[in-house]
Image 1 (cartoon, rainbow, N blue to C red):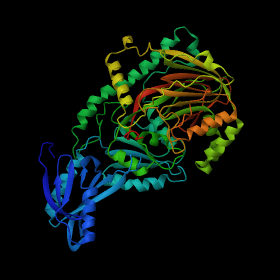
Image 2: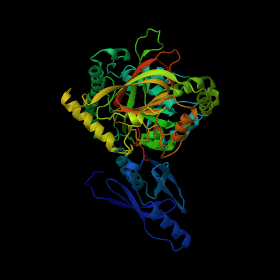
Image 3: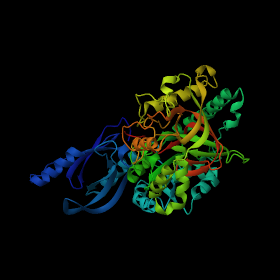
Image 4: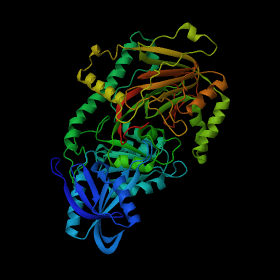
Length: 580
């Protein structure tokens, strides 16, 4: 429908309401009852529908179905030709799940009914950015074996929306990674998105399988090079250049994407059918999606949508919601202190953890039969063991961060006080922080490698060395049902930073206090003298023992020397951003 076209009206029968006047405008459809029955109960029913929902926007319609001849509820006197408008209702608050709704309209004349159906269907198909072809990976044993059941619940939504899905049920650990790693560019270009039905671990396989050979940024220097005099400028420049590659790639694809999107029609094909364009990241045409299936935490989906609900996530995918997401690039230089390794790269979308977090994921591997409860069991065991590890961490931070005074450092376990601002700016839908970071990135990219922007010069290398109970790097807030504010409440989805959390050796009750605060809303788990919190684009880590293991989005990764860098906006996700 033309955006300047006047609204058109028709009289139809609306299921469970009665005869209505249906009006179509460029943005949606609305209806009003023709008359109100004098019967009290009938009158109340019509008034209820009239007041609670008398209109629906095309952007909130995920499918329109022509269902043919049949009886309408509320009028059994005659059969009618019917079509159904499928949409959703928003919950009472911003974190409530989306509730499916269906409005069945009927008309006694077949041609009139078909014309209205076709008009509404055409308007829905004009919505920009909605996917047409998806590759779906289902983890059948996720959580308590809910993966397959979850997909069976949401699959009809994709079918109604005429979204083609190629479904692969995973057979083993690493199956998804191996398939995506071996997928050709031609095969990948046939999809608008890759969907994982499972938890954070399955999404991590999707992420690493896609980025394995398609992320072209150079490696940052190894930690051992930090002894040279020019390393600070060198590694700062690597961080800058790596993120600059991200920005340039996005800009190159942007014009192509926008030109394709505005031409969306009923026969629109998937973006990037040009076989000459190789697939690399970042890009704006291939999005990833998660449909939670009772994973251990589902931290990524909660942090990016605000809720852990399969139907809500499926609707976000169908509607083509889109946000950029930072990704942590973890480069392993050594597996053990004595090993000679070639560099190995892994990626994490939510969290990279060492010490307590690595020990929990390592110990839980042989207890997978317990489901998510294995983390409680092993977590308690690791906590009681109270192991601390010698390590050296170097990280980039702003030169404007003030040093902590000697008086603040006094005491047995006084280390550094938190450096985060007390006025937290939470990440949310249409987040101003993420938007500002993206705009700043575009300006830096347009200006080339210009040192006058201050981005490189305003950073300095700092170091922390000692015995650590845990080392964690949060890419996002990592909200989950057990930690409602996550590890870092004010972490953002796409600002180009990691939140480095260093928990130094301390008495067991103090560490328990820290962990307990993570489970409470509006608490301050980082406000301890033995906890360091640094907002950084990159850091390096060195340990000198053979049992160094990391937890990357719930997946095990052995490494004693790593460099970790935030890749700004490396992937795009079918999500609207969190409502908090």
